[in-house]
Amino acid sequence: MSESVSLPALGESVTEGTVTRWLKKVGDRVEVDEPLLEVSTDKVDTEIPSPVAGVIEEILVAEDETVEVGAPLVRIGDGSGGGEAAPAAPAAEEAPAAPAPAEAPAAESPAPVAEAPAAEAPAAPAPEAPAAEAPAAATPVAEAPAAAPVTETPIDAPSASTEAPAAPATQPAAESAEPVEAPAPAGSPAPAAADAPAAQAEQPVAEAPAASPATTSHAGYVTPIVRKLATEKGVELQGVTGTGVGGRIRKQDVLAAVATGATAPAAEAPAAPAAESAAAAPSAEVSPLRGTTVPMTRLRKVVAERAVVSMNSTAQLTTVVEADVTKVAQLRDEVKAAFQEKTGTKLSFMPFFALATAEALRAFPIINATVDGDNIVYPETENLSIAVDTERGLLTPVIRDAGELDIAGLAKEIADLAERTRDNKLKPDELAGGTFTLTNTGSRGALFDTPVVFLPQVAILGTGVVTKKPVVVSEGGTDAIAIRSTVYLALSYDHRIVDGADAARFLGAVKARLEAGDFRSSLGI
Figure 1 (cartoon, helix red, strand yellow):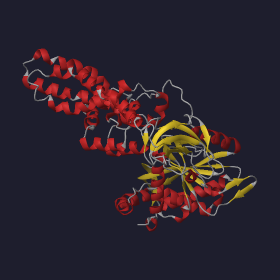
Figure 2 (cartoon, helix red, strand yellow):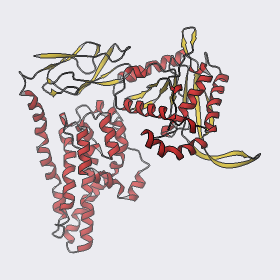
Figure 3 (cartoon, helix red, strand yellow):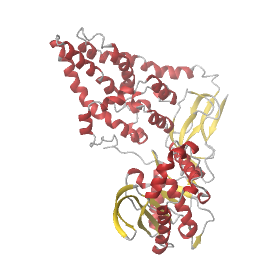
Figure 4 (cartoon, one colour):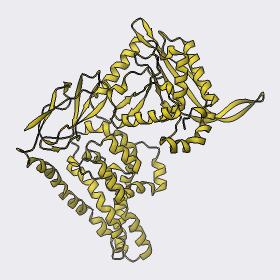
C-alpha cells in the first residue's frame, strides 16, 4: 500500500514552490522526518521531510518544476512489493566504493616503495595510517565525475575559502615526487636521508584531498548544518568520506572524522611550508563558476525583481555619518565574557546598533513608516529586519517588537535568526512583517555602502566595520589626537516621504546614543 506526499503549506502567503533538488530516488528507503527534497519559494528555501516511513515508489514532480501547495510530490509504499529494492540501492552505490580504495593505494604504492630504502622501514607505518584516509577521500573523484557540476557549485562555493590553502599544495605534490625517488640511489646518507623521506612521506597525505577539487561533487549536497559543524570542529569536508546515500556527508561522518583525527594532516600540511604559504596568501583561488552558465534560483529571481521594482518605484538616496563607538567597544570588551557565560550568546556590536536604532525609530517614526498607496502608515511596533548572508543569497528575517528588547534579548534573537536562516530552518512567515532593515555591511570589512530600500519599507541602515584610527578630540577645551573606535552609519531612504532633515535627525539620534555608550543598564544580565 502506498501513500502520496504533497507539498505542505509553507507560510500564509506562500501558494507554490519549485522543486530544486531531490535528496532521495526511487527505491530508497526513508524514515519519518527524513528529508525527501528541497523546495524553493518566494520567501525561503526549505527541505520537505517525509511524514511516513517506507520505500519511494514513484517521484511525481521533476526538479525545477513549480507546483502549488497541496500538489502530490512523491509516492511512498510500505516496501512489501519492493522491499528488496531498498537495500539493493545502497548496496549498488557501495559496490563501486569498495574497489576504489583498493585502486587508490595501488596508485600511491610507488611512493612508499621509492621512499623505503631499507632504513625507512620504521618510518613507513607512520604515514601509512593517515594515508589510508586520503585515498578514501580521493576515490570519489574517479567515481563521481560531477554529474551536475554547474548546479552543485553555488552550494559549495562558500567552502572555497576553506580549500584555498590546499591549492598551493598541489604544486609541491609534483615536486615531492622527484625528491622522493632521488634518495634511492644515494642510499648511504643515513640521518639526512631518513629525515627527508619522512617529511616527504607526509606530503601525499595532505595532497590527496587537495588534488581533487571535485571531491565536493562526490559528497553531493552538504547541508548547512553539516557544513557549520565541520567549520566549528575544524574538519575539511573534502577529506571526509560520506556514508549517506550516494556518498553524501552526514553529521555522523564529521563527528567520526573528529574522533579519528583523520583530517588533521590536511589542516596542518598547508601551514608547514611557511615561506610558500606566505607567498601564496595574496593569490585568490579561481572559482569553479568561471566560464560557466547557471540558472538563477527562484530566490534570486524574486530578490532581483523586487530590487528593480523598488528602485523604479521610489526615490532613494543615502546619508552617511561617522560615530565614535569607543565607549561601546570598551564596555563590550569588559562584559563579553560574563555576557556569554550568562546568556550563551557572543556579544557583538550588532545588538548595540539594533538597540540604538529601535530607540531612534520610536522618536522618528517616519523612518519606520510604510507606504500604502497615497497613505503613510506608522506601525505601532519596531520590527527590525536583519540582513543575513547565506549560501542561497541575502535573506532578512524579522525581530518582532525589537523596541521592547534589551541587549541580551536582541543578541539572542539575532544569533537565533541568523543560525536558522543559514541552516535553512526559517519559517517563511519569519521573513515577513519587517518595518525597517538593519544590515551589517562591515562584517566583510566594508567602510560603508549605499544599501537598497525594499518596499514597503522606506529606510534601511547599513553599519560599516568598526575600526580604530587617530581622531581629533577635545579634552578640557584643548584639541588632541587620540586612537578611537569609529564606525560609519549609512541610511538609505525613500525621498518620497522621508526628507534629508528627517534622515539626519534619525542618524544624529543613533550616533548620540552610541557615542554616549550608556548601555550597562540595558545589557539584561
